[in-house]
Amino acid sequence: MYREGPLISETIESILSQTFTDYEIILVDNNADPETRGFAEEFVKKHPDKIRLTKETTQGISSARNKGFQESRGRFIVFHDGDDLSHSHRLATQHSFLEKHSELAFVGSWHDLISHDNHLIKKNISETLPSFWAETEKIFNQHFQEAFLRPKTRPIKFPLFSTCFFRREAVRASGGHDERLNPRWFEENEFLLKVFDQGDAGVIPEALLSYRKHSPEGNRIMKDQMNWIRKTRHLNTFFNILKERYADRPGTEKLLNRLRSHFLRYTSQFFLQHKDGAPLGRIGLKRAIESSPADELSRKLLMKSYFPKALYPKLFWFDNWMTEPLPTEVNESFIRSLFA
Image (cartoon, rainbow, N blue to C red; front, side, top):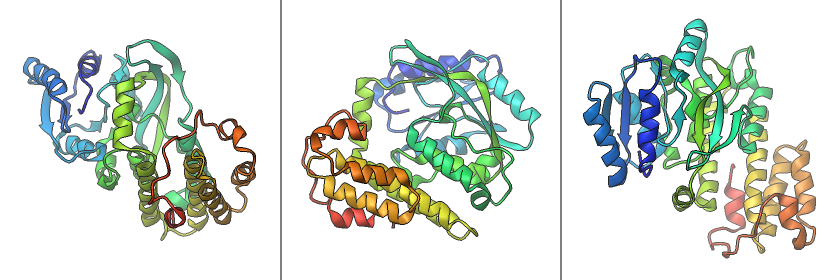
């Protein structure tokens, strides 16, 4: 819990309405505002046998989820965001699925997308979103045996994290969420990759959760927590965590090179959004090509970076230029230090 306000009530109600009733709810106060905590305390008073409230003062999704797991007692675990809505048969469906598939470490599902004020935007979303994660997923599937040290019987899939239903032992064996990725970004799929080490996953082809699109206020809070420079540094931390995990596994050099290339291409576009950032963006794209010479997309983007700037928004898929000047710490040394 952080700044959900009255939305936390809708989320808790969606769990209390489950057809599967053998569960507990652990609410983690991660420096929540008084309004959000007030709503949570009301539910604890009404359902003391079902709901417990705990506190984690270290700010961040990873710390909050680790605290919730430490406080939990169940055989299965769901890390539920404070503004999403589980459909009434969600727990029953996923519990039944894992009971029938003892070989799986967890199961996810499709989801619906709703607005911050509960209007349906899109139903039955099955694809991995955003495209950054679809590309990451593709790379790991192409190097599955080297990464996970077993033959590929099921491809890996990054379901929407709130849809995931985990075996407790898989969460425990994974070591939990990496708190180096506080306060947010990249922690969810870093965790999923560790759980894939414990076993395969399934995806139920049915929407079992409504994912809430952030309100303008929610977007502002996220931007305040993590601007593009912090996000770039965070992605660098994510890459270093993956290097720690996979570098000693036989045959993973190409996996890490392709991830480096993918991450450099992704971050280069932040620089290209600045009118004076093209030289730095080109350094990133050249490094991406050096890391993975077969990366044709980076070659195309590098070529486009020399086109007239009037064409940039259309060429690079961003809506507007970033108007603020590049910070002084963002220089050639900065981009050459990334994903080293």
